[in-house]
Amino acid sequence: MVTTKWAIDPAHSEIQFKVKHMMISTVTGHFKQFNATVETEGDDFSTAKINFSADVKSISTNNEQRDGHLNASDFFESESHPQLIFVSDSMEKLNDENYRLIGTLTMRGVSKAITLEVELGGIMVDPYGNTRAGFSIAGKVNRKDYGVNFSMISETGSILLAEEVKIHVNAEFLKQVAVTA
Image (cartoon, rainbow, N blue to C red):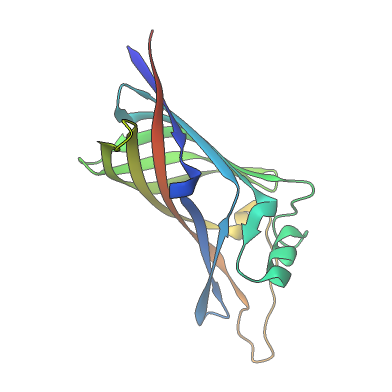
């Protein structure tokens, strides 16, 4: 059996989240600092073992005041919980391009199983001879499941922040090593 290691290319990847604000618009944020590795049997991504982490303090919503609040105890509590971590349990191939990824997301010290939808964009060799694989990943979590209970009602009675947080990832991986076991 050949084990292949893949490393994320951060220059060609993005980790985003989206949440409804006042139930009328959506705020998008992303993590600037993250890392991910994948191990597969050969190039078969249905065998993928995935480890991902993001530096919570690298969060950006294009609003410095909001980013500071997101790092505080109302949200990520980054001083006590500096990393957001995902470890895969399984990746089920649905067809040639689509997979269902199941794993554990740990945020604020709380670990919960989540399911993500994965689309394989393709595998190709770049002009420098490196093998690359591209993926689009989507899912959602309930922030309250992770102890993010911040809630506020506006003066007009509307909810300030939705409980559902959508996850959007575009990831490009570089093949590192293939080892025969």
